[in-house]
Image (cartoon, rainbow, N blue to C red; front, side, top):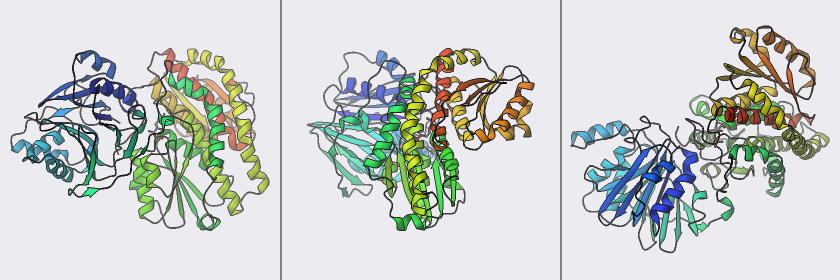
Length: 593
Ligand code: F6R
């Protein structure tokens, strides 16, 4: 959802281009840099990935400071004109921006009426023109008054022809500051700074920062009052790993180990970490997230129905914000997010907190905005996930949520010690079962060849298998671009059967022995109409190609049966020559509502 970077110091052009490459997971449809030297700012930008931008930047160009951007289009098509950075009309200010300027149109009309000429369709360009309009000799004053006029979410880094400083503005979009000697860095993701900076700080919301070539950084609120911000030492473990192959496959293969790690991390961090008093007060639990994180909440809610006698509702974060889900001091909300930076999920956490509920972040990043927006935090310990399509984080979210819900159920007395212990113990055999499923991946690769030309792929499951179907379908469509939907299997006969014909593939997930006959009937209905069926199950089905998975504890099936579907998506996308790690129209971290 756009990555921004800015720095003062030696090797600024090269370091900025390298950082943008690492930030590409946030958006990769266009990229650009602004290079400041003396009183002059030069812009290099274009549609396409950072590799293409690098080719267009002169090799000998030197910058005292550089700002850069990698874009995921929200306002305006993918084009060079809409790529960042944007420069003001008289070339006094250049900006890169991540977020959405909600009042950009009213600001634009006002600036145009004063003579500003816009060159793009973006909301971001308005910031550059506004800075120039607000400048009357004091750059910090121009930055703070600009910040005050903006509405929405924004992380902005500004370079100016007036001096050698870099300025930054932050509200609701992530922005980290790093320092090392007399070098200063601004970046959307802390993990890009670990190789450059010694100390880092998260910029608080509603602050501006001024950094100078001496290496100093000062923070102010939008009225210009100083704000104190704590720096901490960079954790090298937060760095991106460099890897030549497909991250998605690497991350799928890591699942067994990461699940063990998630369990270990859960207990090392004290388990549930809620007092019995708080747990007894809880009458309603929400599991809130977006995309894959929502699907893990959907699955966890199905498991919770077998453990708890209270309402446990999965809700899509963007729906939760604007709908009227009841919240009071008996409400616990788990906010699930791999990145911890998804704007909708953060807003949902704020809505729960504002209405008196208790918020619990379940994320993969210990320094994320979501973590600090919630009362409690649990790290899913999946380690860096770099493929844009989420895989291992889903499995680790599921394990962490299952442990959290099992602890709540045990404290509430709705499961006994025996069931509680079995759930905990079964995580280890789950890892072994996934290992054996991964060892059979050649079968999935072969099936991928057979289904890659399907006109559509439908995923079916009942009860706890439906969320797995939803995740399998999401994975396939997002990286192969094949049309795909997921349905509770019994719902099929209420309309969707109309779409079953030759050329359509159905993937059924059937892990509940009590529902085998029902699933068999659903399969028969689609086979009769010409669809071909693949069934992921520990059981045999005579009317489908079965991908066999081992039998595990019933609370663990979701984290197991999704693995063949993750592999299927991967292999189908490979057969279709898609960019599996960077699929079209998707960013790793969706930081706008
Ligand atoms: C799917 C995918 C997205 C994310 C969603 C939420 O593979 O990557 O659907 O799951 O954007 O992201 P997080 O978990 O970072 O909040």
